[in-house]
Length: 213
Image (cartoon, rainbow, N blue to C red; front, side):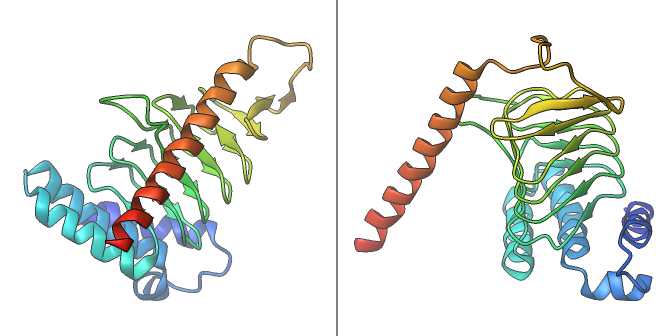
């Protein structure tokens, strides 16, 4: 765990030009604090200390504004920049040396059981406000643009933009606009988007009803 935390600090120092020292990162970076707490929570989760794991994760959420389920699997060198509003679901898998900006959601659509959340490969960057929803894979070195809503697999070394997200570059080469292989089915994407909105509205209604009691 200590080697992994050291890798997390070094990753931030390398990728954030505003970072001045390892001490500053250790004590003052909310993203690092959230990842550090998650590693403890995940250890408890894997050793069947589920209540303690959840307690650690919720305490971290209140302190940092970053919610990481203790069941999520996170590789070394994760940099959560700014971090406020980041949500990472239970069955999410994140590879090594990934970068995630504020208000990112790595979640589910509400349709799946078992593996419900995305798998990010190594060196993936997810821009501010992006939503990656579903049990698919985002390949190594992929880039997801700010504000994108990703509902299907993203190939390695590619760039995804838009709502719903589409692949605009692979290996630095712009996609042919007539290429139908790497474009998502608009009907299924629209249905997924609607289901996500409905689920969100249902949660809000339930919360309002509970607050009235």
